Figure 1: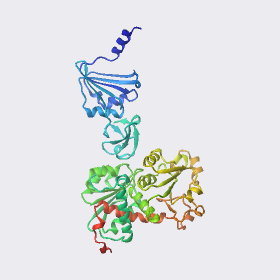
Figure 2: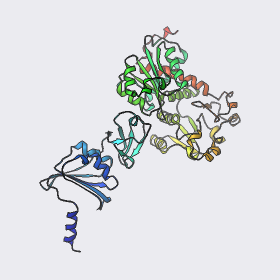
Figure 3: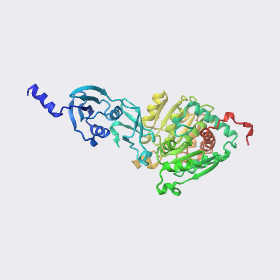
Figure 4: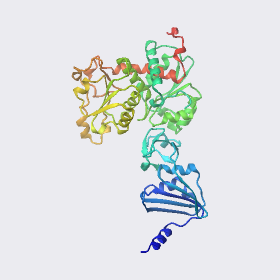
Length: 157
Length: 313
């Protein structure tokens, strides 16, 4: 197999983007949580979602390409809950014009559901609120009932 | 939370804890003091807790305030499907302070977010019960003359027992040495052991409630081992008596030792301990009255240093 053949195959795997956002280096186990956090299922523009792609850093990874949409910073930072090492590329006219990393906020409003069935947020119409108590391992604590959870266990609302 | 609500022991710092203990000592000397004249306090008990409710209501009455409320949500609009938010908003129209107990965890924190009236958490499920912690601290302080440098042994259900977890958090300021005595199924969760490591608090874990442990303790804090906590009932039968305290076990204990228990007790403290002067659990419950008087005054912004103490009645 020639080098050019391999390269050609790779480029076929994910279509090139003229304008939009590429979110790379999402762990393969949390890709679909990231999709939900970004609200991608409601978008009307072209979206490419790839998973279990080879990655030198993560082993396997997921990637999301969204045409003609640039997410605001707060929205992008929310995916740090499930993909703390995600890389954002903003594409304009086929060129990467901006590269960004996601930053985990200190407090997460909404998005994550508290796993404690006796928590007030699962019993009244209350927006969930989590404090990030361990940035390295991404451990969150419910502001209301005190239950701690890891990002792996996070259920996205 | 822009007021003096008390939801969790973690909401108050060392200085505030000491202020509350000082106020509790004052109320023990002067239990009847009309500081709440003209004030109305709601006790909203969405789950029954006779002991805690009577203690809070006595505290309000001894301070000269009036109480409205309910002792069981079955008789309220909650049974018609009213949200907690609406109940709190409605009651806030009438009262100066809300004291609430709820089976839902986080209910009191949420209540502070929907009202400007101060809220005291009298227990929210398995989560927080700060007035219990403050009465525990007051009992330790009163019997030992200090909170500093004590050997404190926690026995029984250390996994689910919220009182022992809150006590660890509150004692962080006072250089305690902890012994955690529990069976494998009910041992102290890693979260609280990590808390101790982070705060430089010395602790050891034991599965035997041994003579050595008892004889070196200043405080033994007993908790109830509940049958329903066990997945394996054989294991429950095996351990239930291993963490029971009998009078004969106290023969060579330290003279200053006191036995605490949040009550109700079942078999974990034998009846023959009750007459030992080292048994302190009934006085401990009485201390709850003084601690709650102090908590109520703090919540209402009543500064004890400015009142005319000669007006005691």
